Length: 278
Image 1 (spheres, rainbow, N blue to C red):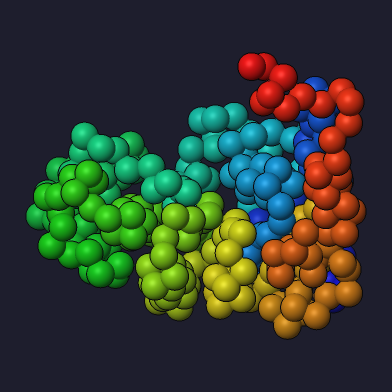
Image 2: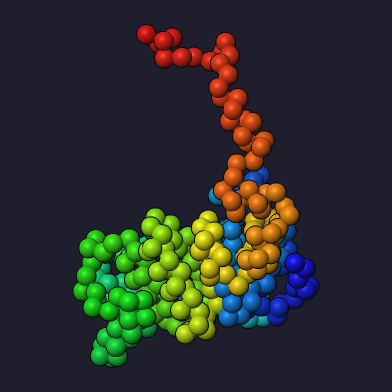
């Protein structure tokens, strides 16, 4: 699928010619991408290929070695932390391991991002806000529970409620179904779809879960070695001719990697066995 040339207003978030190095290691290699407003963009690829690093640059949790990042037409990668504070208010985050504060109740976890932005004076309104956010994810009634008493799936749902506490325009999900069984994973998928349709948010999802990707994505982008190698809807990705794409989406080891693994069955004189240490 060929996409139109990217300019600063091509999407709600635009990354242009982004390169990221850690010393000599190249993680993102001249990446350009526009995230479409109101759509769900899923980013896939092997571990360490640059998916999460790209997402961090979209909110300037990391700064590029070169290139530019725009939010709603405004360049943001060069802004100060103080200037970024208001922009980040328009993002919600759902972390891989939920990242709830164990010492806080569900209620306190959800109001935490609000307290970072303003002094709460109307607690009745806050009660209603928390109730509404929890109801959206099917967790109303759990306000006074602590995270330790929740299942993994329940923690993810509370994390989602916290992510929407400030009514963000963009929600970022990092491996939202990791560690969940297929049924609980599908609950998270349904909630991602629900929040998109009811709140009209833009969603960016990093995942290895292809069942989830196919269900929730308007668009799937695949990274490999710091570059985008595939970009399109689910049908486009399923039928993509690149063998690296096919190996990933089917969870299949490449022939070259398989040959290297099979070499492990050969014992050379320089190798040791347990008997050598008796």
